[in-house]
Structure formats: structure tokens, C-alpha cells
Length: 112
Image (cartoon, rainbow, N blue to C red; front, side, top):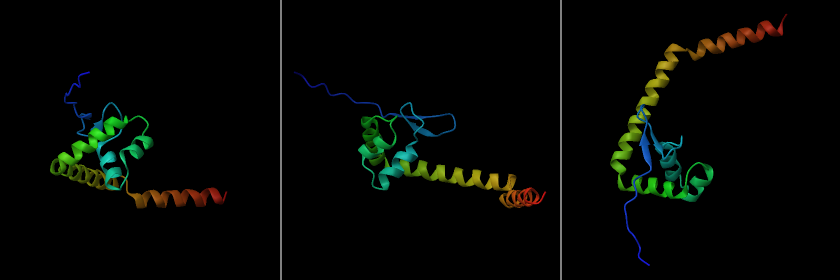
């Protein structure tokens, strides 16, 4: 029996928005890295996300460990985008205004 050694492609794809996902799932690279950094094993991660193959989880973690600077730069950029979107949403949809309207609605329904 001959053992065939061949490189497997990393099961990561980037969508049009620049989000890196694992294989053909909705699970992001961010999610896998965060779980791994919190101490989750690949087996635990695969159990938490049944759409992921265990081999893909191992491959993504291996990619992460072999490309720490690049992955950390990507994650940092994603955090900056999230902060920017949150700030834009807060300007556009003032959370204080929503709270006031909900409280006003509550008082009018409490007293007919």
C-alpha cells in the first residue's frame, strides 16, 4: 500500500463583502479563531457547528497558527469595520430616541 501525500487546499473562502468563511458554510474565520483562542478544541468547535467537518476545523486552525500576523491583521480590520458600522447605525437610529418612543407607547397603552 502506498501512502499518497498531497497538499489540501485551506477550506476558506472570501465573500464579496470581504468576510472569510469556512468551506461552504456561514461560519466565519472569526468564529473559529475566537473559539480556539478561548480554549475550545477542534472537536468541541465541530460539535458546536454541525455544518463544519472536523478536518476543516483542524485545517483552519492550522492555517491560523501558520499565518498569525495576517489573520490578526484581518481580524483587527474586521473589528474596525464593526465599530464603524455600529457608530453609523447609532447616528442613523438613535438608541435613546427608540427608548423614549417605546416608553411613550407603553404609557399610552397602560392608560386607555
